[in-house]
Image 1 (cartoon, rainbow, N blue to C red):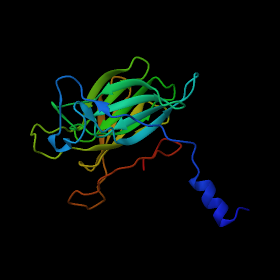
Image 2 (cartoon, rainbow, N blue to C red):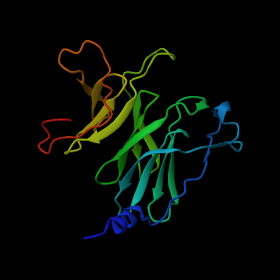
Image 3 (cartoon, helix red, strand yellow):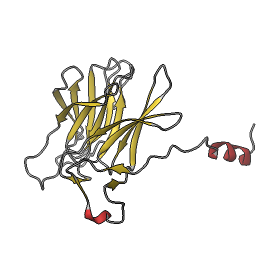
Image 4 (tube, rainbow, N blue to C red):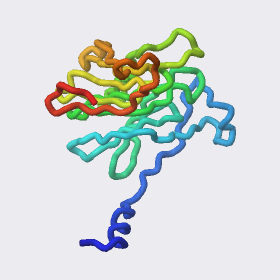
Length: 212
């Protein structure tokens, strides 16, 4: 049995850090003037969530960069950037705020929620391309609150993608083939007349019959 001091030392040990460099602003885009202290044309990545991509040539990591409106696929061992996914939705950065990522078991495809753009994007991890953007209760008004997609979960059979919509008190159900919205599950409690449940995490029962 480890002593408290040994347990603390073990828990705090690490192998190292993978440094994510400042990200380049895509051509034709402008950064937020409030971040004037940054070098010209550069932006803070701010990793929000990540997912491990299992590969035959070594593991990779997919990262949602919240403040640079992109996602990065990097080598897990050396941190070399393999693909940069441009997830901008406006002329200004940040605007879409990538939030969470989830990867298919074969490591070929992934999804990333765009918290401030009321959408989820599908990514092709082999080609480095954005396959499609799937709108989720997006408002036509630029000043209206969005649905704020947060947590993502692929069903056990990977036929459905569940998306927690923190700003809409609902969970979106998307068909993984075709990327179409096929349903909305309310997260309001029985008898709850006003919103505010703000779902931000998801889990599926082993038998696939319940979502938590």
